[in-house]
Image (cartoon, rainbow, N blue to C red):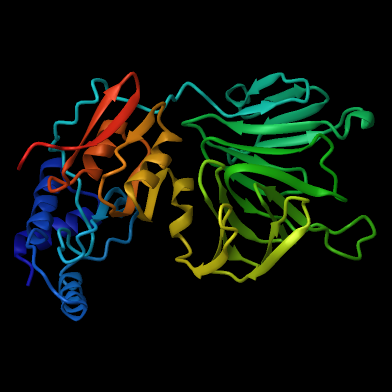
Length: 385
């Protein structure tokens, strides 16, 4: 049974009327409840998790996303109540020398066929910017809208929306398709993006809400096709996400509405294998082994980056650091001998890198971070505990 004082704090937390000191008190209580460590088999673990879960309040607000959790590889030890590690203001000694923030002065860019770069920070609501015969303007809900009205002889020139490290953008294509472009990504297309040929080329990660579009004769819907490294995704009208960073072996295609055909391309660009995804499924493709697989997903989980969060769903430390390197102006050098682990949860992108690492590092994890000219070194701690 929950103590009466804790019940009152939970009520204040859910009503968003809790003070900073009260919130820290509540978080400390949760952490204390989660500190017991014991060995157990799978059945005992299941019973224990159900018992702990029964003591947790239902926090159906976005505040819950500010709670990050870690599941470490020592699976027989439960260090966090139902995987929830509450972040408090208590700071650990992480010698990063300086507080590293994402560069908020940068913005997404449009790269013209001539190589000229237009900063999308320059596009304000109500503004219209000429982009070498095309137009850019910002909609009332924050999308950068693109339209072509230039010389038809220039129609096949390539344009690219690009997001440097630490930036994101939302794009409205001429057919009404909406695209969220994540950090360190690029979306390319022909200058005259016509109804007859709805093709784009993606590097990195993007979420698409594709508008259905009939062909000029009005008889059939025109396919929308996204090409990325080693694969193509074809849809008519749907909501899906592609993550295909070239430095990572695995690419994923997650479907939330409608249907998509995921095609794996051979070196000659011909279709080697294909799978049809249903809503709630994720296609996985390994470019090294050329393995194609799929799994079921939680609908909201892979999209939380659009709401301003780092989202971890079983990634190890190396994969977590790859996400962070796309947001903060740093690189990571990770000791190959570090033990594997899993991270689960969401952390706001508004936090500095120091604060994020402070959340990720549990006191029982025997490694350390240091900063050398914005290269973050992650090493095993050789000191005996």
